[in-house]
Image 1: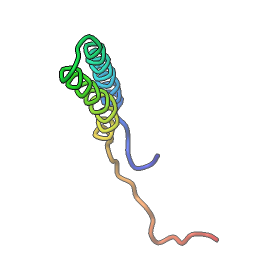
Image 2: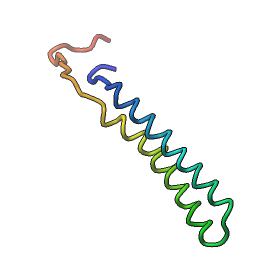
Image 3: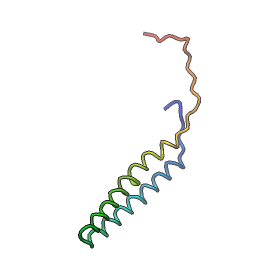
Image 4: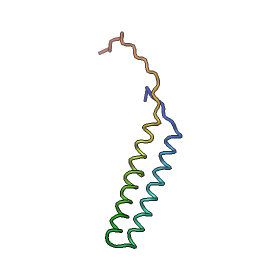
Length: 82
């Protein structure tokens, strides 16, 4: 796309954060299997937060911060050809 460039380091960092968040969510889910009651609900809530928050949301918002907008010039005196 014209008008911006993309930072590869930020994309790799976002992927790493996503992997860590998903692994943390799976760890919390496995801990929830061995306990009962309110402790189980807390572990499952933490798992949902880490998978949904860190694993998905951060992975999508972090690369957006890596975009760099470049100068894009447009000739406004030209008319479109129909």
